[in-house]
Amino acid sequence: MLLSFNRPDIAWSLIGAGSAWLSDDAGAALTNGRPAAVSRLQWLSGAQTTASVLTLRGSWGSAFAPRVLALLGVSLPIGTLVTLAFRRPADAGFTYLADAASQRITELPDGSRCAWFVLDAGLDPVIGVEFRICNDVDGATAIDEGAVVDIGEAWVGPTVEIPHEAGWARGRVDPTVVRRSKGGQLFRAESRSWRRLQARFSLADESEVDGGALDGGADWGTVESALLSGRPCCAIPRWRGQTSAYLQRTALYATAVQQGDIQHVAGSLYGRDYTFEELPA
Image 1 (tube, rainbow, N blue to C red):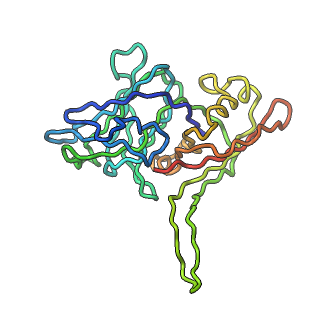
Image 2 (image 1 turned 180 degrees about the vertical axis):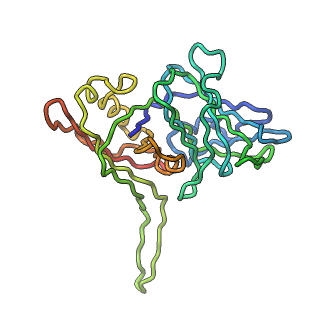
Image 3 (image 1 turned 120 degrees about the vertical axis):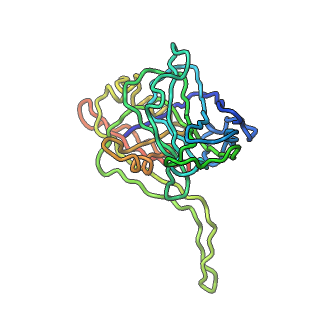
């Protein structure tokens, strides 16, 4: 499992002729942990081609190696191309891995739209990212000049890899209240559903539990503290050898609703259970 957490405080800006924030938050809603509360922006002005690019730029203070990134709750057309570029502390601009990673906007079964990225491990630490949104919708120009675009959440954060056992489970929680009238008719008080992911971490040595042996010097204790108090995270149960479509379907922007006790199994080996619940767009 990939777990991404501790998203930094990010300052957002828009780059591109005619682009502008239309919502008063000016991008702050992109990192408020509520994908359904969107930042609204105006698309580029002028004649549009597949080479037209609106850049969403985020910058932060302390460098870390990027691995999991996402745009969630977007209103962009399905198939819109998004590429990435990064800035390292010594770079003059956003030239690191520029346009090396790309993904097209995908629609999930619940109707929400997203773009998830999983990068290779061991990249250089960075202090900024650009989400380069192209007016390329499966090879055609489909976004009108000055169009209104909503983006619910943007994610980038430190990431650790924690193996988990087979038998992990995912499902959907539906809080809708359904009642029958005296005449037996159904009446529904519908509520937004969300997904749930349950997993048991594979047995791990105490160095990974308390000794800082995970990526970036993290360990199970670091992860536990980072996920307290309903803080958001990203949980991706499977990514190796999987298709992009599978990744988009199974990656979860979530909160840890259950961090089970660290269980001593034998010698220096420990286990733990986790339950994550989605923060839906």
